[in-house]
Image (tube, rainbow, N blue to C red; front, side, top):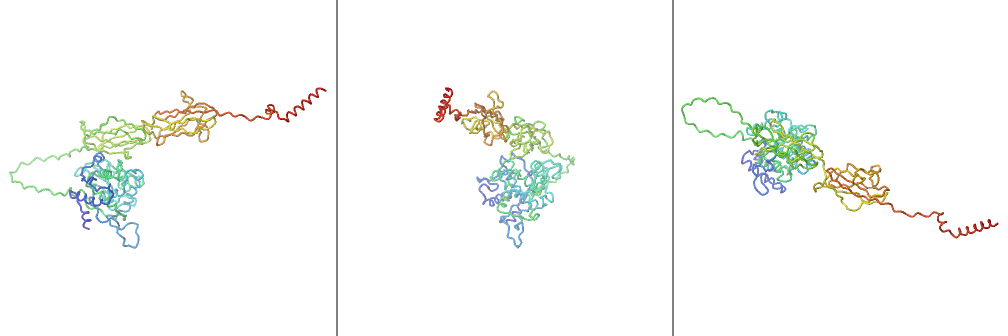
Length: 584
């Protein structure tokens, strides 16, 4: 009981970080080898408050690095206690620390299921969402939610005005947080409005994306954690994801401790009955005692000073941004459908004097109904500028829709002229076609070819999959129009056709044509296959004449050729008779 009490009363500071790391190590000891103790690398080196390089290039955080609950889980087993009631309840009756309110737990599990389908490589466990939900809002303040998952009262973080916290000017006109001057973290997963604007999801299919709804917020948190293809089954992937949510190793340690606790077992409890943590990471920000001043030596009265003019707050880096400049070699990018763009969008934030501005957030948005995304499947990415004022967007991934699309760069928290980049997606193409077999293609007139024509398409030596192709039985090498005789394909009704369109190579770049038939005209014919991108292959087809057969002789022909003995006798008699008649 003492350890549980200690965990609940743990406060911010050096002791907090140290004890958190030790507690996490104890909780993680029985887990898989790849789930290392929070703050301790697999090599045994303690982690620092500086995130890995991968973390530094991502968003500032989902929460704006807002305060969070620092309470650690109790060290006793999280399994539910046996019920003393003879009646079986649909929810567990274990400790409130181990229990998760029913609606909140359902939201986490539904988010895990959706991510398993949409981003299977992320391997997101619902226990990670539960751990973040515990640290951010105490599971929506103990499950204080309606039946559809919406919080019964707002859950708002402190005003992010730079006074002990990040300085984030209003980005939503107070729509989510009720503050039109500064932003505040909102809802059970504590998203700041500027992040919710692109990360928000509709998790309960009610047509709205509401950060105050646990279904929406849990699904959004899952997509946020998985947005850079981080793998939650690895230590490095999970660490990068958690630190991107709130960039603090103490935060990471606390989340990991709850993750491991929930992994050992948890249960559902009625909504509204969960415990709410009591300690926050900002508890000490206003309670540090000041150092008593040394009594001054009496002196002669001084001349009253002139009242000072109230000082103007120093401008934030965001306030100093005047414009955005292209930081790459071009504002036009090109990729083939289905491919990743090899060049990333790169933007530099500058003052009016052209000086770089570091540590401001640049939001990259794919504008309109475009069929391309950033890595991780998102249409928006927010990246902080580095020391040179440059923000580099995640790699773009082309979809199947072709055309020219716009990627727009803006500054979060400022209204300045956006910088647009043109991203062009071209059709899938092939530059080479080759048959997969070298057997001669022959057929007897009036018959069918034994082998189907099969070709493989490549582009710059790589497999050219899903490439559009056309096959035509042409008149000659100089005349590519469709022939009116010779070999042919059959349509669905069995009628001859000599041009096939809407063909496409498969995932291996292979295209197999339908069976070919021959009419009764012998000769040598040509089949030409072309693809998007200019690949062309001409295949020779040979139709041979049907072999001649000797017909059976007719009776009259047999009589004249070789008369039978009876026929000879009859003829002699007739001749004799004729001769006799003429002699008389």
